[in-house]
Image (cartoon, rainbow, N blue to C red):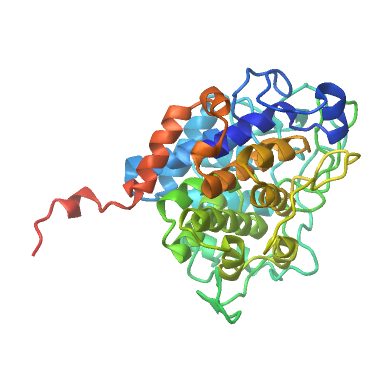
Length: 420
């Protein structure tokens, strides 16, 4: 949890920036900066941490994973006017606030689009998603109109629209009945049939439209490319602490916490993969990514992209210096974060390499920090970073509580009963 927040705070000032612009402005980012994107003090975290905090608080206070309680907390968080909200989350939380059930809101955003094309799209305080404007800078970006498109690649296993029929798993209220979630050792699927996967549904961010990226650099970068967003992946980290020894349950819950806002199967698979990697490091698994890839029934692109990271992971950049802004797909974000976290010699090395690539820096660095924290431990982070980051004490307390089983205690009505 602390690693997640430290990474988020390191990445926040250079979100939307290209590697070349980071070099021009800073030379090299070597620590927590003030100013930058959103012009905030050093140590300020974004929605990556503040929404993960809501998940952690819910787990500890409810004593279990309750997605309806998580959804309610996200609505309360959004009502506080956070400075950074990704468009997919904003659209889903707006639906939740308007009375949509937790298992429907993300699905409807996935089906119909986030409404605005950008990750930090203009959001009215009534929860509606603005069109053609951004939460920072105030400029209008041509083409930022959102809506549906065909978001899946030809190699996607999700090959028809039936998952969104009226009798779909989402409409029934149970998202596990017909959902193949795990890949067995021999490649067989446990947990139901694989029928009913959408290929022609919309991207969660209205992908394919230009988005507002860059702080005054004069031109938006087209980051979508028909891919799923990564904003819910950090919310799986608290679950990894709580359910680290229950791999199948953890993967299932990680998908569920993603689905509240990000229902694209690539987003949910990315959340499950990261949760299992974090849990693997916490449990001393020798090859946590290899195990996670066996357990998660991930779309082919995610499996293909993570395959080179199994085994010895070379340290070094994941993008060229002349890259305009890294695409913020769930696949690209998770792969960049894992490569840095698993290939570096220390959390500082991992995070500084990640932050200097810019782009989707808050999310990449948040995931990288969480994985590095599980791999190396909180004590391996520079103390100056730990002391500067927002919410450090609460994060430490929640992490300890989750690790000690606070999210798996029986309900009071059962715990108080005498044994027989």
